[in-house]
Length: 284
Image 1 (cartoon, rainbow, N blue to C red):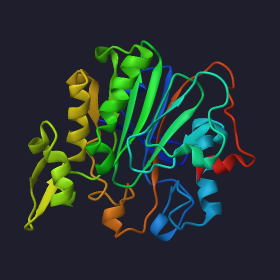
Image 2 (image 1 turned 45 degrees about the vertical axis):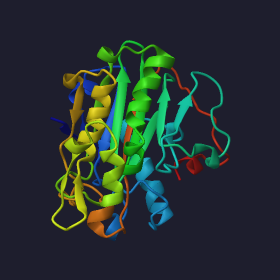
Image 3 (image 1 turned 60 degrees about the horizontal axis):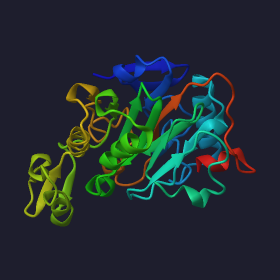
Image 4 (image 1 turned 60 degrees about the vertical axis):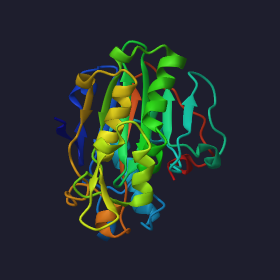
C-alpha cells in the first residue's frame, strides 16, 4: 500500500520499497497543493492543457521548494504515446532542444536529475535498481502499454546496466482503473494479441466495448521480465474514481490538468543538466 505524505503544501504518495532506499527521492503527486484554478485546480504541472502559464510556473516552484530540488533539475518529456526510451548518460549534455524529448520513458544512472512523468489517467511506472543505482520512469498509456514499453525499459536496464531482475523495484502509480477504462474493440485487439491478453480485459457493458486493466497489463510485463511479484507495488487508486485527489482526462471530459510523478538519484554535489536559455522551457 502506498503512503500519503506531505511536504509544505504538496500532497503526494510514496511506494514503501522506494521510500526505503535512502539514495532515492520519489513522489507520485496528487492534484493538491498548487496555485491553479477551476478545471486545473490546483497542482497542475502541464503548460499544454490551457492553464495560465504563471500558475503552472508557480506550481513547479512549489514542488521544487518542497523537495529542495532546483527547478532546472526536473526533466519532463514530450510524451508522444510511443515506446521510445530516452537514456541520459552519466555525464555531459543530454538534450539540445525541446523537440529532442519526444519519448515516453527515461532511464539513467545520473544523480540529481528528477525524471518526470505527467499523467491524468495513464499509468506512471517508476523503477529502481538499488544495487546498480539505476532508475527509470515510464509513461504507460494504452498505446505504450500495447507496445510493451514497460517491459522494454526493464530489459534495457538489464542489458545496458547489468541490472538483475531480482534486484529491480517497481511502483505503478495512480491511473485509470479497470473499473472505469472502457475501450473499443480495436484497442482490445492490441492486447488480445499479447500473452495473457485475456487476463487484463473483460467485456464492457456495451456491445463491442471492453474494460482494460492498465495496471495489471504493466505488472504482467514486469513479471515477464523476471521481476519478483513482491517487488512490484501498485497504488490501487483509480484517477476517475478519485477526482478530488487526481486529474483524470476521461473523468473530466478532456479538460483537466496533469499531476507529476518523479524519481531522482540523490547526489553529493549539484549536477546541473544542460539547460535551454529559459530553464522553464524544459518543463513545457
